[in-house]
Image 1 (cartoon, one colour):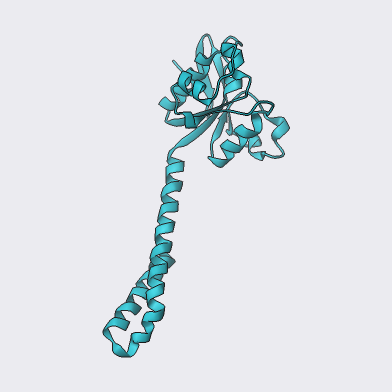
Image 2 (image 1 turned 135 degrees about the vertical axis):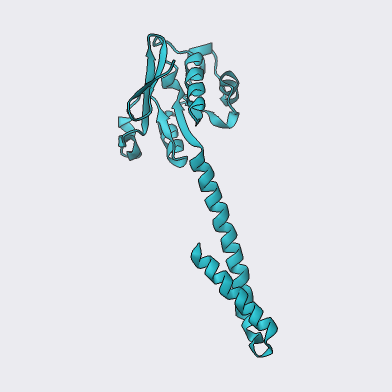
Length: 196
């Protein structure tokens, strides 16, 4: 970025010299495009940095919905996923949830689309995904987490996918959790956090 500012200043100086000193008028053919290019590059850099900062500001977490729904009493419950997403939101995270195709049958005896789960969880549809039938959810979860620089909330270790997604071996990438005495706990790093 400092180089682009320097390029802009030098180019603007060249334009100014070309416009005020007749013997330097040919400099306008170099300084003019240099000014335009440096302005465009500065704008592109600024937009990219703004997007990157926004992504970092949003602390994304991806829930393995089909895993989390079993955390309470080892029975599939959408209320369990809802409780975990609410807790994470209160902690400043931006949760997204990915389910396998059979998840709807486990909680409602029918197939549920992204929109059905989004409605049940009170989340925007863009933050809920049901993977296509016959497709494992794990690679989707791990790819989305990688693309959003997110962590994954699950008790799955993803050993079968570690070669393609080595981040599963990184400490803190997988957030474990569950319920003890009816209370949610999440291991967000630095020890287990009990929720009141």
